[in-house]
Each structure stands twice: as structure tokens, then as C-alpha cells.
Length: 156
Image (cartoon, rainbow, N blue to C red; front, side, top):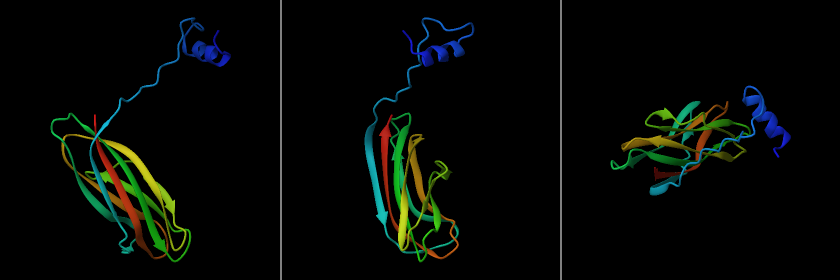
């Protein structure tokens, strides 16, 4: 016997009422990925930040030509250092100049603080450039704090 919510959901989706063969859709599953290369980078430059996008690091990657595409698993930690608590910034990552997503907002806690961001991105075979930015939106002065990037090239 179906649960009441399930029956109601199927009845709502099927014109003419619930059908005894109504089944929930199976979730789409992505098969396993094989890691073919890992890129690691980090730093603690202490360079002054201006309001807006500040380039932190560029990493050149490659998706082997014998693949139809690669999935890049992206993971970043980013900090800024400021005299006052509450300066806000976003962790932004681009692949070949295209922003991967809206970024991850973070707020520093003096003297240094930050956040983490992760996502994945599909690329065609060949060379690509990943760039990490600190998008500083605070009102005071700040410097780039510690950061680290972990990028995995996977197939499919």
C-alpha cells in the first residue's frame, strides 16, 4: 500500500487520478570518476587588496585529448587579513575566464579569517586556466591572507 503523500503526489501528477503503477522517479546517478591528475597550490602573500576582484593565483591544467571531456573538482580555502572584524569578500573561481558559480561569501574575523568553496566544472580536451580571485567588498584596508587550492582532473 502506498503512503498517503506518495498516492497524493502520483494522483496530482497523473491526470485522472492515481494509477496503481505510479512509481517515484529514480534519481540520476553519476558513475564513478577516475582522478587522472591533481594540482595543489597555496600561499600567504600579504599583498594589499583593492575593492573588487583581486587575482590570487592562476593554475594551468590539461584535459587529455583522448577523453571527450574532463570534470574538474575544485576546492579552495581563502582568507583576508584586516584590522577590523566584518570585512566581507567572495571566493571566486574562473575556468578560462568563465566564473564557475556565484562564489562563496565570507567574513573575516580580525586579524585574519576566511572561508571555503568547492564545485565542479566540465572542460573539453586541451589546456585550460583556472584562476582564483578574492572579491573584496569591505570598506577598510585589507591584505591577502593564506589561501590554498586543490584541483582534481577526473574522467569522465
